[in-house]
Length: 618
Image (cartoon, rainbow, N blue to C red; front, side, top):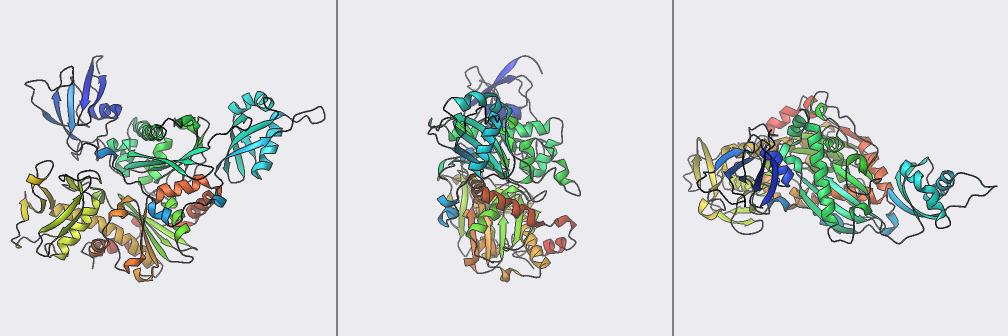
């Protein structure tokens, strides 16, 4: 790499970055804060990071006479001042993320005032002054009073940095001090001691660290009120679309450090966004609870996750004590604590534990329920108040828009709902943000698949009818395709289609999820009809068309009133854990008592999966 520096302008947002000649375009984009997805993890095999590159003048305009080139961002390197336009990115697409937990709020899943008691507590303590007769050290007198005030039965520790300033702090206001305390079980750590009883808000952050998206809530820890919400795409997406590609990336030289830095950079950018009103500074934030899958927790902490995907599929940790913010480089109060919600197994993480914590607050006593989180890895939980079983199935990213020729994430320009007339003509569709469509997001893919089955344009194997003589069925290379919208009405000018290959990917994805549910039920001698409730978690579930999801066999054919769509239960669970030490203990109990079933070790799973490779299934 030479010492010469080049400027790159990333379109359509206009982000500029100056980098050394020879820097990869993917690294340059990350430095500019511009997200370019690389679903294959930078191997140059998926084409998701394709971009148009042309030479630029010093003011960022296209150089005259230079022909644009199509390059993969993960493979190409900066050789001159350039304009780069990622072809998969639309203006504003990065920031349209479903953050809602409105259903849980309506169901009173949030904590009442009498239930509040954060794992991060603030106490006003009067520490007795020393005397010749009462000559305990400053530290011992403080610890004794804090243990009584906080009702902590075990050890109370304090950081060296706190100890260094303690003598002056205790004597500056007659022993009156405000203590910030992190409580874990019967032990507590004193994070901060301030003189007097100052009036200041006690703040923390709940974070859903997803594979694709990251969402944060700023919380008043005294009242439980959500003060602000921020969200963005996970910057790790430039290193792979799913956990498997990220594990592969982490196994390469320097990979684990890069992925950890990307996770921390995403979190820190959102923290600054939460505090952007000017009424709060990031240093005023005392604690953060992070809810995410097992791989995301490993990558955040910088722990090698490679053995998660190697038999016998054992993670480095399931539960880990809270770390200091300074250790992780997270920009809240440096002595503040970062706590990761405990996982259950290699592919069932803290986000699922958080979801069950929410279910426990709104479900009826004794109900038999199925909990489904539809994503790249479909996580499933079956159980009731007394027992829980769980598994994870590799659904792939089809329902998130990846691996589908015209699939995109739920963002402006995505068709999210679509209906067909009985003759198979398009009756109408809704586009996120309005205007011309760019592609199909997961909810639309489920709906169009159900509609094609209903109108007879595909058979039970998901194959388009080659003899239907339908004006919307055409050939795309060797495959058949259904034209959802003609190029004259799309943003790109190209047809939006659903091909035979796309349908095959969707059928495999729904089969993985359905067969996982079916296997869990069979292991305990139950059927779908025995269920009292089916909880569907995540932003995906908020837009899903139930009838079409049942028609294709993604969801079971049961009384529709039994379906409950939770929204972002991972984020809601992180809130509960941060605001209540009792809820934290409950989440630990959930993680410890859940029985994890490894599907790859189940001989009957492939039979279940094969049977589900039909619409709806055999």
